[in-house]
Length: 182
Image 1 (cartoon, helix red, strand yellow):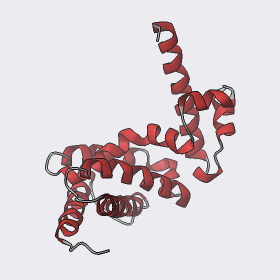
Image 2 (cartoon, rainbow, N blue to C red):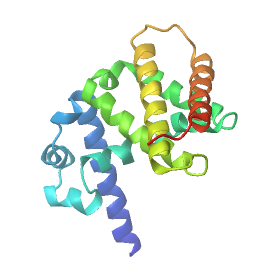
Image 3 (spheres, rainbow, N blue to C red):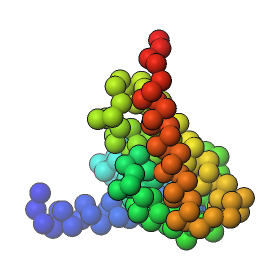
């Protein structure tokens, strides 16, 4: 790809991400359509599909940064600092309330589970066990963060990071110790 074309791709992807983020903060995730994103970004609908397969793919690209730190909870102690940075990001953006919408929370948990599952490849035996562990940790984290952002938990990001990391590790240890059942 030529540099000029590469710059256009970066600009278009940036516009699509910005449009999606604006809609994501303003609307229920399930209510956002690809046509809405195209209109907000000022591009044709077919342009989106040149860059993203579907809305979930765009969500994945958009929230990967803040969720990577949460996924790092399975890599304690190395992941503790990254986890705290992610929590600080969520706390700093708590006013947008998008994570408090149920469909948004579910969508974020799905992406987080994918990121966690990728980190568990070398730790868990089979794909079903790995997926179960990833979903359990993701739902636990998103649920606790949801309560924290609503003010139900009075913890500093560092203290919450320690607790989430300990919970993730407990799930990982529990899954590894669980007998295989079919």
